[in-house]
Length: 223
Image (tube, rainbow, N blue to C red):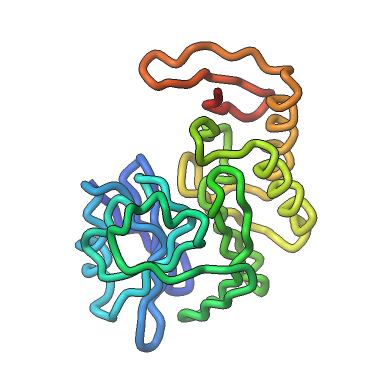
Protein backbone atom coordinates (compact mmCIF):
# COMPACT_ATOMS: atom_id res chain seq x y z
CA UNK A 1 0.00 0.00 0.00
CA UNK A 2 1.31 3.42 -0.95
CA UNK A 3 2.35 5.52 2.03
CA UNK A 4 2.34 9.32 2.01
CA UNK A 5 5.17 10.88 3.98
CA UNK A 6 5.65 14.61 4.51
CA UNK A 7 9.38 15.23 4.31
CA UNK A 8 9.95 18.98 4.67
CA UNK A 9 9.03 22.36 3.18
CA UNK A 10 5.97 21.13 1.31
CA UNK A 11 7.72 18.06 -0.12
CA UNK A 12 5.95 14.68 -0.01
CA UNK A 13 7.36 11.20 -0.57
CA UNK A 14 4.99 8.51 -1.90
CA UNK A 15 6.30 4.96 -1.52
CA UNK A 16 5.20 1.34 -1.26
CA UNK A 17 8.56 -0.29 -0.34
CA UNK A 18 9.20 -1.07 -4.04
CA UNK A 19 9.69 2.38 -5.53
CA UNK A 20 9.12 5.94 -4.39
CA UNK A 21 7.71 9.02 -6.05
CA UNK A 22 7.87 12.68 -5.06
CA UNK A 23 5.12 15.32 -4.93
CA UNK A 24 5.64 19.07 -4.52
CA UNK A 25 2.52 21.28 -4.61
CA UNK A 26 3.08 24.72 -6.09
CA UNK A 27 0.84 27.76 -6.29
CA UNK A 28 -1.28 26.75 -9.29
CA UNK A 29 0.08 23.31 -10.13
CA UNK A 30 1.77 20.40 -8.35
CA UNK A 31 4.88 18.59 -9.56
CA UNK A 32 4.71 14.78 -9.50
CA UNK A 33 8.01 13.04 -10.10
CA UNK A 34 7.42 9.50 -11.45
CA UNK A 35 4.20 7.46 -11.43
CA UNK A 36 5.26 4.10 -9.98
CA UNK A 37 4.03 0.70 -11.11
CA UNK A 38 0.65 0.29 -12.79
CA UNK A 39 -0.72 -0.97 -9.46
CA UNK A 40 0.89 1.73 -7.29
CA UNK A 41 -2.18 4.03 -7.44
CA UNK A 42 0.00 7.13 -7.34
CA UNK A 43 -2.77 9.40 -8.61
CA UNK A 44 -5.03 8.37 -5.71
CA UNK A 45 -2.25 9.13 -3.23
CA UNK A 46 -1.49 12.49 -4.84
CA UNK A 47 -5.15 13.45 -4.60
CA UNK A 48 -5.01 12.90 -0.84
CA UNK A 49 -2.42 15.69 -0.71
CA UNK A 50 -3.61 18.19 -3.32
CA UNK A 51 -6.38 18.85 -5.82
CA UNK A 52 -4.13 21.04 -7.97
CA UNK A 53 -3.46 20.04 -11.60
CA UNK A 54 -0.47 17.68 -11.75
CA UNK A 55 2.59 18.13 -13.92
CA UNK A 56 4.17 14.68 -14.33
CA UNK A 57 7.93 14.48 -14.80
CA UNK A 58 9.68 11.12 -15.18
CA UNK A 59 13.25 10.50 -14.09
CA UNK A 60 13.31 7.74 -16.74
CA UNK A 61 11.00 5.41 -18.60
CA UNK A 62 11.27 2.07 -16.77
CA UNK A 63 7.93 0.40 -15.88
CA UNK A 64 8.33 0.97 -12.13
CA UNK A 65 8.54 4.72 -12.80
CA UNK A 66 6.16 5.08 -15.75
CA UNK A 67 3.70 2.27 -15.03
CA UNK A 68 1.02 4.59 -13.66
CA UNK A 69 0.92 6.88 -16.69
CA UNK A 70 -2.47 5.58 -17.80
CA UNK A 71 -3.99 7.75 -15.05
CA UNK A 72 -2.48 10.93 -16.50
CA UNK A 73 -2.96 12.90 -19.72
CA UNK A 74 0.70 13.72 -20.35
CA UNK A 75 4.22 13.62 -18.97
CA UNK A 76 7.64 15.19 -19.43
CA UNK A 77 10.45 12.75 -20.21
CA UNK A 78 13.80 12.89 -21.96
CA UNK A 79 13.28 12.05 -25.62
CA UNK A 80 15.74 9.14 -25.56
CA UNK A 81 13.37 7.27 -23.25
CA UNK A 82 10.22 7.94 -25.27
CA UNK A 83 10.47 4.51 -26.98
CA UNK A 84 10.05 2.88 -23.56
CA UNK A 85 6.55 4.36 -23.22
CA UNK A 86 5.08 2.92 -26.44
CA UNK A 87 3.01 6.06 -27.00
CA UNK A 88 0.91 5.56 -23.86
CA UNK A 89 0.38 9.28 -23.22
CA UNK A 90 1.21 12.65 -24.75
CA UNK A 91 4.90 13.21 -24.05
CA UNK A 92 6.79 16.49 -23.79
CA UNK A 93 10.59 16.73 -23.91
CA UNK A 94 12.70 17.13 -20.79
CA UNK A 95 16.20 18.48 -21.39
CA UNK A 96 19.43 19.51 -19.71
CA UNK A 97 19.05 22.88 -18.02
CA UNK A 98 15.24 22.90 -17.84
CA UNK A 99 14.08 24.61 -14.62
CA UNK A 100 10.99 23.53 -12.66
CA UNK A 101 10.02 25.92 -9.83
CA UNK A 102 7.39 24.46 -7.50
CA UNK A 103 6.59 25.60 -3.99
CA UNK A 104 9.77 26.15 -2.01
CA UNK A 105 11.86 24.31 -4.62
CA UNK A 106 13.55 25.18 -7.89
CA UNK A 107 14.64 22.06 -9.77
CA UNK A 108 17.20 22.04 -12.56
CA UNK A 109 17.35 19.07 -14.93
CA UNK A 110 20.66 17.27 -15.48
CA UNK A 111 20.97 14.54 -18.11
CA UNK A 112 22.56 11.41 -16.58
CA UNK A 113 22.23 8.63 -19.20
CA UNK A 114 23.34 5.07 -18.51
CA UNK A 115 20.76 3.37 -16.34
CA UNK A 116 18.57 4.30 -19.30
CA UNK A 117 19.53 6.48 -22.23
CA UNK A 118 17.08 9.16 -21.09
CA UNK A 119 17.72 9.17 -17.34
CA UNK A 120 17.75 12.59 -15.69
CA UNK A 121 18.41 13.98 -12.24
CA UNK A 122 16.65 16.92 -10.62
CA UNK A 123 18.75 19.26 -8.49
CA UNK A 124 17.77 22.07 -6.16
CA UNK A 125 21.04 23.97 -5.85
CA UNK A 126 19.91 26.25 -3.02
CA UNK A 127 18.68 23.36 -0.88
CA UNK A 128 21.62 21.17 -1.97
CA UNK A 129 19.18 18.38 -2.81
CA UNK A 130 19.58 15.73 -5.52
CA UNK A 131 16.87 13.45 -6.96
CA UNK A 132 18.87 10.96 -9.08
CA UNK A 133 16.15 8.48 -10.11
CA UNK A 134 17.84 5.06 -10.07
CA UNK A 135 21.35 6.24 -10.92
CA UNK A 136 22.56 6.67 -7.32
CA UNK A 137 21.46 4.20 -4.64
CA UNK A 138 22.66 2.81 -1.35
CA UNK A 139 23.86 -0.75 -2.00
CA UNK A 140 21.39 -1.49 -4.82
CA UNK A 141 20.76 -3.67 -6.73
CA UNK A 142 21.00 -1.26 -9.64
CA UNK A 143 19.65 -2.63 -12.93
CA UNK A 144 22.25 -2.54 -15.69
CA UNK A 145 21.09 -5.26 -18.10
CA UNK A 146 18.99 -4.94 -21.23
CA UNK A 147 19.22 -3.03 -24.51
CA UNK A 148 18.32 0.34 -22.98
CA UNK A 149 21.26 0.36 -20.52
CA UNK A 150 24.79 1.55 -21.15
CA UNK A 151 27.49 0.98 -18.55
CA UNK A 152 30.00 3.39 -20.11
CA UNK A 153 27.45 6.21 -20.11
CA UNK A 154 26.42 5.29 -16.57
CA UNK A 155 30.00 5.68 -15.39
CA UNK A 156 30.33 9.00 -17.23
CA UNK A 157 27.15 10.25 -15.55
CA UNK A 158 28.40 9.26 -12.11
CA UNK A 159 31.65 11.08 -12.87
CA UNK A 160 29.58 14.17 -13.72
CA UNK A 161 27.64 13.87 -10.48
CA UNK A 162 30.87 13.41 -8.55
CA UNK A 163 32.02 16.83 -9.74
CA UNK A 164 29.02 18.47 -8.02
CA UNK A 165 29.11 16.31 -4.88
CA UNK A 166 30.37 19.23 -2.76
CA UNK A 167 27.25 21.18 -3.75
CA UNK A 168 24.93 18.39 -2.57
CA UNK A 169 24.03 17.55 1.02
CA UNK A 170 21.09 15.16 0.59
CA UNK A 171 20.18 12.53 -2.01
CA UNK A 172 16.68 11.09 -2.33
CA UNK A 173 16.86 7.92 -4.49
CA UNK A 174 13.81 6.11 -5.86
CA UNK A 175 14.82 2.76 -4.33
CA UNK A 176 16.23 1.39 -1.09
CA UNK A 177 17.45 3.64 1.76
CA UNK A 178 16.34 7.27 1.66
CA UNK A 179 17.75 9.82 2.24
CA UNK A 180 21.40 8.96 1.63
CA UNK A 181 24.65 10.91 1.78
CA UNK A 182 26.52 12.25 -1.28
CA UNK A 183 29.39 9.79 -0.73
CA UNK A 184 27.24 7.11 -2.40
CA UNK A 185 27.95 8.77 -5.75
CA UNK A 186 31.61 7.79 -5.48
CA UNK A 187 30.82 4.36 -4.02
CA UNK A 188 28.50 3.52 -6.92
CA UNK A 189 31.09 4.89 -9.36
CA UNK A 190 33.97 2.82 -8.00
CA UNK A 191 31.89 -0.37 -8.13
CA UNK A 192 30.62 0.44 -11.63
CA UNK A 193 34.21 0.83 -12.81
CA UNK A 194 35.06 -2.52 -11.22
CA UNK A 195 32.11 -4.08 -13.06
CA UNK A 196 33.29 -2.66 -16.40
CA UNK A 197 36.85 -3.83 -15.74
CA UNK A 198 35.71 -7.40 -15.15
CA UNK A 199 36.74 -7.34 -11.50
CA UNK A 200 33.36 -8.53 -10.16
CA UNK A 201 32.20 -12.14 -10.37
CA UNK A 202 28.62 -12.58 -11.55
CA UNK A 203 26.18 -15.21 -10.36
CA UNK A 204 23.09 -16.16 -12.43
CA UNK A 205 19.93 -14.52 -11.10
CA UNK A 206 17.32 -17.12 -10.04
CA UNK A 207 14.53 -15.81 -12.27
CA UNK A 208 15.66 -12.73 -14.26
CA UNK A 209 17.79 -12.90 -17.45
CA UNK A 210 20.85 -11.36 -15.83
CA UNK A 211 23.69 -11.96 -13.42
CA UNK A 212 24.22 -10.49 -9.95
CA UNK A 213 27.51 -8.66 -9.42
CA UNK A 214 28.45 -7.55 -5.92
CA UNK A 215 31.00 -4.78 -5.54
CA UNK A 216 32.46 -3.43 -2.35
CA UNK A 217 29.43 -1.17 -1.76
CA UNK A 218 27.02 -1.75 -4.64
CA UNK A 219 25.21 -4.69 -6.22
CA UNK A 220 24.37 -4.59 -9.92
CA UNK A 221 22.13 -6.72 -12.11
CA UNK A 222 24.15 -6.95 -15.32
CA UNK A 223 24.76 -8.97 -18.44
